[in-house]
Length: 241
Image 1: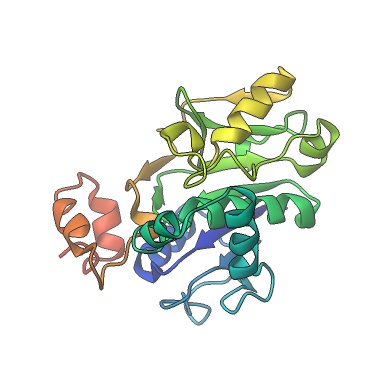
Image 2 (image 1 turned 45 degrees about the horizontal axis):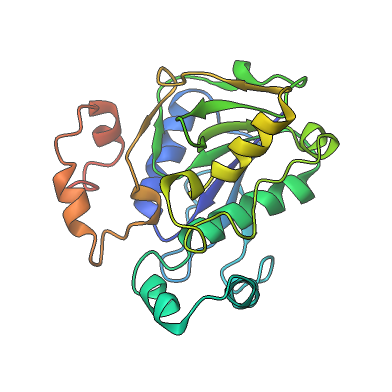
């Protein structure tokens, strides 16, 4: 059965709600959590059934080492580095590097889920082994919220998810957020990918995957109190306070 991978970073309440929504829709097996947290790990295996890929200490991807190399390659000034560390802390780089690692190492089809979505119904039928990827998009990028990925096809077409230059903060802009360079490479190949509107399958709580309820982003949660999705609130009534 196809694997489902959730990339988690310091948002255990959101990810537990996502896991709860998967369970509610009969999806409770072959789930992997790739744990990138540096302060708020998930620690929910006593509640949900999932396999853990623990990268909390850089055991799988050493982000500090990778970012140091990337900063040099992209001639990042200390001022820009400080600005990034005081902001989203290379969130897009870490996310895209993680997805590239999954493509390189899982060697089988999988669904990628962002931690800030709620599943509304079973989505597994959208998988297509003839495609590199099946997912939603904007005019600028393939969205990583709910995304089918076929590593074999991706490698056959010599497509990469992670671009060492065209990603924030090295090349700023919405088109260089996670999935931007992947979108461009898929379009350049011109085949073997399918873009769909997947709104019927999930709800996305924008930018929740890299925000922390306990720190400066509490205002984001407060601003989203009125999200019109009672199912999500029932899964975790204390999330939006």
